[in-house]
Every structure is written in C-alpha cells, then in structure tokens.
Image (tube, rainbow, N blue to C red):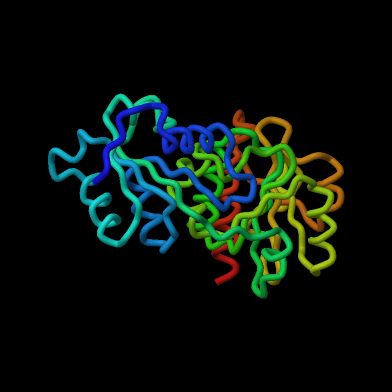
Length: 265
C-alpha cells in the first residue's frame, strides 16, 4: 500500500478542497470514518480514493479491515502518516479513514415524478447537522425522496453526510435553489403539499396522508414563510403541552413522518 508523507501531496489537496467546497451536484462525496466508508461500499458506490491512517494498520482495526477489503476489490487505497492524515481529515479528531466516493445525482423533477410519492421538502435549514438528521429520519420513515431548497445547507457536505449516518447515500436527495420552483413543480405533478407549522394545523394523525404527498418543513427559528404555507394544500402541527412551544426541526419531522408512515401502510 502506497504511503504519503507530505501535506503537499495532490491527494491531500483533493480532500481539503472537497471539504471546503462540497460538490453542489452531489456526485463526489467526502466520507469521514469507517461507518460511512463501509456504508458506501455496501451501497456499491464507486470510490475515487481511500486514505487510511498508517497507525491504524498496525493492528486489526476496523479501518484496516475496510481498507484492505477495498484494496483487494481494486480501489485506490493509500496510507498516510498520522501528521498528514490530520491535514486530510475534516474533523478535529481524525477517525482513521476517509474516502471520496462517486454518488448518483438526481433532480427535484425526478423525485416528484415518482409514482407513489412521499417527499420531504426541506426549506432554509442552515445547520448541516440538522439537515443530516432530517435525511436520516426521512430514510427511516419511508420517505421516497428529499428536496433541499432555499437557504439550506449543502446536503452533500461532509458534515451533512455525517449527520445523516449514510442515509444520503441511499435516499434520493436533490438540491433546488428556489422554493418557488419547487412549489410550482409540486402543483404541476398533482402532489398535495402539506406544510408543517407550529400551530393551527391539523394533528398529524388527522391528516389524510394517502396519495402523492410532499411534506414541507422550515428552517430553525422562522420555519416556513407565510407565502409557502399559503400555497400549500394543508397544514400540520404537532400538539404540545405547555409550556413547550416548539421542537427541533428533525424531531418535529420525525413525529410527522411516522404519523404519515402509519397512515400510508
């Protein structure tokens, strides 16, 4: 296995550039940690490269086992001294293995064309950790596709990918700069838009979740804009006992998505 010992190596630069500027199309993904690299391998993604910390090769670590299995499968795997690996890994405490994998991109149009549609539309969620959690909840709850719109964080950044625990590798995820375009496409595809609002909406268990559904959730704090709520077909709110007035966006989405999952079975 080739060993790189210079921070000026082109491989180091490739990882640092992708960490700083994620691929907006979601084709090249930076994966940090054994869990995500294994998930990408199991999802049959093509690897551009894999780098493992040299110190992890001294024993039968999980990183060593994964790296060797990928190398045997013909993947370009290199080892890096711990000092160099610190420059490659985007996290403060390096995990021991990183990879760049190629992912099949999709579009909002393709997601909205699905026959039995249950889409999650995420609007203006700026925290990549929350965005990752939402994608994880979406996969667990049977959502068929995720559209990330407005001023949301990049769902293909390493932080969002890590927050999703690998769900972004499997669930169709598309970016759309304009929520206006998304709303137009929802109407064109005969899809019912259901807006999650803090109050004055239907109880999640009282909503008719049958048919083609797009559930819209808004960003931390302001939530969905009044215009988006007005353009939606229905509103849904989670009943909460006082004095609690709101929940984290991922928690709220989980409650609503699982209500829809029960109804759609």
